[in-house]
Length: 213
Image 1 (tube, rainbow, N blue to C red):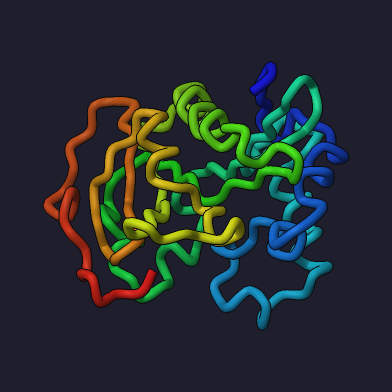
Image 2 (image 1 turned 135 degrees about the vertical axis):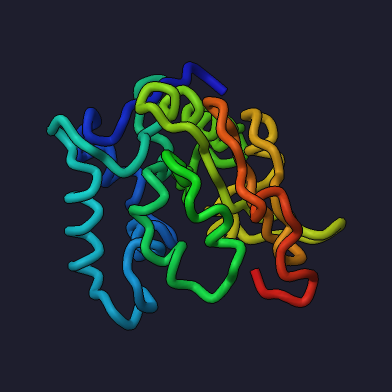
């Protein structure tokens, strides 16, 4: 990895955000999968998702914003979505109970998506982006950072777009801890940035191996 830097997306150029989201599944989703209450492909158009991303990143403004843009040697190369948990309606509307762990816990910021441009994949950039969420979380006053990564079974593989939620090892390297094992592959991870008492729902195993990811 060459020299890595990052910016909150509102401090980045719109062109940098567009460059990161130019290809692959990210180009279609535009980081809206957890933003809309219904099924994204049915209930929104591509034009609506394009506009939503630009509105949420708020480039060139004082913010708030919806994520961080990562740079390698000054070129926009990656993205990580990190916002207050309540900004993701589908975290609360889905049937899976693990997406509502500790609902009364305050100042939780969710890390829900990574995008790495082709040409920078398999370089460790996702690890850098995960580390940036910690520094950013401290700056914005988050008490807890929470992610929902995939951990494939031994010998198993995940495709790139499936790994957009992050991999468990990526979060562990950034100091997160696994706090729930709701499905065969899905984990809930947290990084505590300030003392906080978890409710009785915290640090529990989820619905078990039979649940879907």
